[in-house]
Amino acid sequence: MASNRTRQKQSEHDALVRRIAEDHVAQGWETYADLIGWTNPPEIKGHIPDVYAKGNVGERLIEVETPESAHTAHAKAQAIAFRAWQRSGLNRTFETRVTEG
Image (cartoon, rainbow, N blue to C red; front, side, top):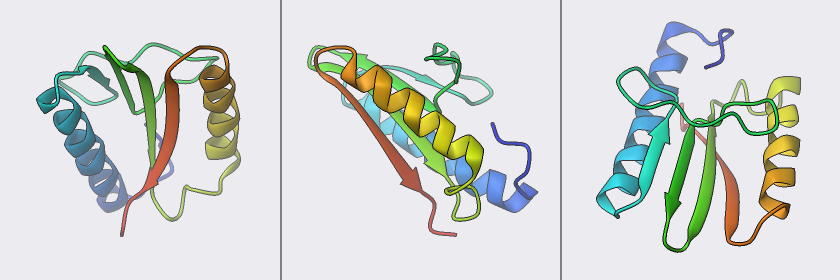
């Protein structure tokens, strides 16, 4: 979890992470989320994604950003690492979602 967000922005971030994770669980994915009360996602190339989901059709990484964090060096480094992970195996997808706030 990013530590440079305001409490409100972190709350918006966490709410979207939770919604994405719960949607994946409802669809039958084995789902991990970087949230209290969830099993943590695995470290991927030195970074922890917000959501990691594994299912019959493959694996997914989803990173959630706020408008303020979307273009930071940290977000860019994560995206580079997660895209490399995506390219390193079959049926892997990576996406970034940005909160509306």
